[in-house]
Image 1 (cartoon, rainbow, N blue to C red):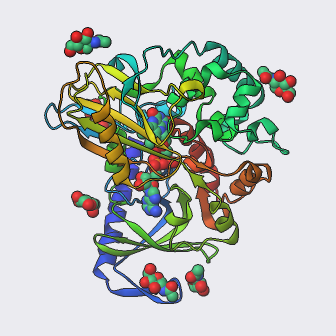
Image 2: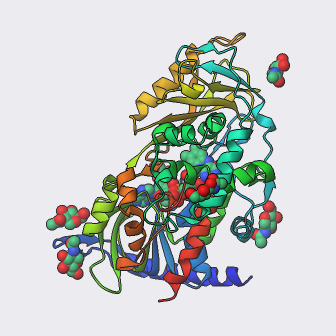
Length: 472
Ligand SMILES: Cc1cc2nc3c(=O)[nH]c(=O)nc-3n(C[C@H](O)[C@H](O)[C@H](O)COP(=O)(O)OP(=O)(O)OC[C@H]3O[C@@H](n4cnc5c(N)ncnc54)[C@H](O)[C@@H]3O)c2cc1C
Ligand SMILES: *[C@@H]1O[C@H](CO)[C@@H](O)[C@H](O)[C@H]1NC(C)=O
Ligand SMILES: *[C@@H]1O[C@H](CO)[C@@H](O)[C@H](O)[C@H]1NC(C)=O
Ligand SMILES: *[C@@H]1O[C@H](CO)[C@@H](O)[C@H](O)[C@H]1NC(C)=O
Ligand SMILES: *[C@@H]1O[C@H](CO)[C@@H](O)[C@H](O)[C@H]1NC(C)=O
Ligand SMILES: *[C@@H]1O[C@H](CO)[C@@H](O)[C@H](O)[C@H]1NC(C)=O
Ligand SMILES: *[C@@H]1O[C@H](CO)[C@@H](O)[C@H](O)[C@H]1NC(C)=O
């Protein structure tokens, strides 16, 4: 009840402010030395840049803590990597992005706050697995994923004994950095005889690119204690089988303080008490006068045009490389709707396939529609990924496959996905310097690059950031 009243009030204030300033159009502001036309001005305690998992969480929580907020999002919706396809034929939903969350207080609280019901996820929809070499289309009859237990147990014991701080972020890394964290994961596997868990990690931690080449730090971050615990306890997903509901409810609460379809033109943080952000969206150019910024977008330099990056931001963000992850839902695949087709290679170590390529093709719960997950160690043109998905499916030599021309019901690029830096950068204190940016120039950083590709853990991380945003 308290939440509702406060938000209603904020909405009215927001509307009034927006309406008044819209009327006073065609002014200009000087943010970069030249006159920039401005159609509206919005003043807020906090401007949240990016309306995905982290940004949406920050906006809801800050507004509940009495701060006025506005969210700037480039897409036409909130939710980021959380995406839901609604089948026009059956009306059924398919979550083809983020699927599940951990059973953690922060998760239960956030879903309760937004009135979205959770259930323990059932894996029954995936059916049995069959193993194919997607590069040839042929079945790999002798293949067995094997029992991951010995490797998993040893891996988990190491994490729990020596690296549990990683569950909270990169902040707990000791210096000098333990050398095992810097080893390419393939070498770590051999050093500790973890071979039996490799294919499990490859299939759970999709999107890491070349798994065996990644510094072990990133594998620990991605395939962490919470994930392992979830194997026993189960993960949570929405009862309505529609994970986007969370973000739709958040949007309804935050509106009109969400600027969708918006591009950042300029950010100027030179004033000590304010950050100015010039945004272009379908209704014109809006100047945001922000007490603070929450930065919740991938910090790649090509995503930060117009930002007044400091030398350290420029140097730190410039070091990120990324892998890429793509999703699609395929129609007319000719494949049965009750089997997960797993890509394995008869010729590689651990039989994990070479990327770029499809990880797996799995049932969606709706007959005739299949989920496809595709990975690459670097960003690829979308046309190339789409073409490879369709040709791989066409080439799969599955017995009883019905002929037809597969098509993409929906396709989504999640590039850049995992942001990483080199082992030498990690050793030289990259994450110490990255975390030292917190609060500098009224900017607070969250999102996967600052922690991990995991909504539950990102909400926990963002929650821990709130006191420093609200306290001053
Ligand atoms: C296919 C897939 C499945 C996944 N499954 C799970 C899962 O089951 N459970 C889980 O916990 N995690 C899962 N993840 C990981 C997921 O990425 C994280 O959980 C989480 O969504 C990351 O949150 P974020 O805030 O960092 O990024 P995002 O949620 O991507 O949010 C970033 C937002 O910023 C916007 N943006 C980017 N650049 C700009 C810009 N320049 N200006 C304005 N807006 C911008 C984007 O459009 C986006 O909305 C999955 C990821 C993928 C791709
Ligand atoms: C930011 O604005 C100030 C004036 O407020 C100006 O002096 C400065 O050059 C601007 N910074 C950039 C990077 O344009
Ligand atoms: C955003 O753009 C999409 C299409 O590109 C459009 O359908 C939608 O109405 C726009 N939304 C807003 C709030 O501008
Ligand atoms: C919460 O959602 C349920 C349906 O899922 C609805 O019946 C109820 O009215 C909602 N409650 C609030 C407070 O919005
Ligand atoms: C944790 O690290 C110590 C010191 O390096 C090592 O002796 C120990 O075996 C490690 N624990 C596990 C469970 O691997
Ligand atoms: C200032 O920013 C505006 C808006 O992005 C741009 O059109 C203009 O060229 C910029 N001027 C300078 C001097 O950078
Ligand atoms: C899949 O469904 C078909 C019928 O549509 C059935 O014959 C087959 O046994 C099922 N396979 C599995 C593995 O459940």
